[in-house]
Length: 376
Image (cartoon, rainbow, N blue to C red; front, side):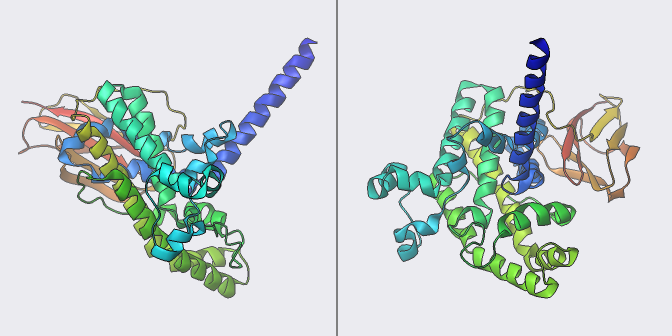
């Protein structure tokens, strides 16, 4: 009896882990893409958002939580897409009603949920984030922010916005996974971008629908790139195919990633400001996905000079920046490819004002932040 229970336990555990792995593998932009989009929101943080740097790791690590929930939450799936071109009013005017109640009144509950509810799920998650700020519930706030980043990223993946989500109506069968997972994983180190200025959003619902409408315009270009890559390679699986697909879609892919990270930063800023701009307490959580990237300085606090130590789990392009208390760049100490290993760099802060500074390290798949205090 006991042995049978143990066997069943391990069988159930194996099945759970298998489903978890599949959820990550089949997620929008894949685990790697969502990780990068969420973590790179920090590139656009305004001076008011310097305290959000402490969230960078958790935002990245929890970026695929929403995909994992699909395995046990039957309501989760429709939140990740909208087949917007199944709406006749979109085909006629390029837009649909923003209020979910209005859309259901026009088309019925079943139709709306069959097409996906991505824009409304995004707005609901934004509202939950704002409510968490208002309640000063920081642990829930960071998780809602991570989910918000996931839905925003899905809204910046063109194949999450169309009925032709897998190329099944255009002879591009399988393009969904080939583009968002296989190609992105292969070329993630080349998806690099900077942040840019963010502003508070006056109408969040309109903002969400606007980027959906804008990103929908990339669908034809993506399908044409797939056709071209297939013609050149003669297949959809070779290195030549993926290299050609990347060459044809690099500009749009980097643009979509950049806009997704920027949109997440703007939505976080807006939710925070709408709640009164409270001071955010530290939130600590055990790492779910240990990426092995670490950074620390010593001594801390320090007078004029400090030694910054970091370790890399694998070879990667590495950027190490120093930012001041407002989030402004002070100096870039490193920007090059480094093999796996442990490293140390000295920062001479001579001429800088006393106060709080942040050492921010970016590797291929991650960002880490170290708070430093310069004193006399």
